[in-house]
Length: 155
View (cartoon, rainbow, N blue to C red):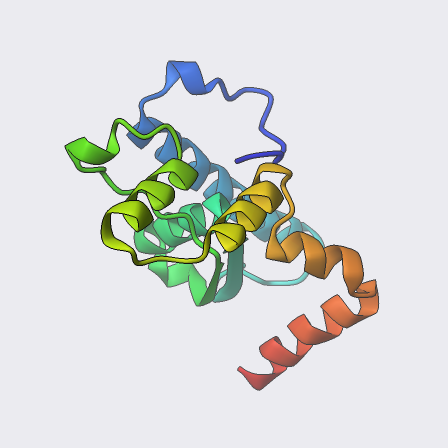
């Protein structure tokens, strides 16, 4: 979760990975229930189901888990750069990071991206400069909103 904010009552040291997943899935569900309650209080009847859910990176991973547990609430699911965690083979455990693994694999097989591309992308990533950061920074705010509106309207 890089530079993302974290709930004050969450301490990752006290949870197993599965408990952490459930904590955040339940957090999303509590938000949905609170929104439902808010609509009911305002006189509007809205169960706040059948909604669009989107997440980026680890948030996309959590949105995917939420949609598996509560599919009845999701109309559309948009996962942007969802994180993928896989179990590494024993030979990969010796590498400290992805950059080292890519470099070693290229040396061994001769395949892979050019070294300058790996170095450049590693620099960007380590400085938290992701494609979404560029989009948020370089596009005017109204452009970002209109792109999202167009996607929703098409569906």
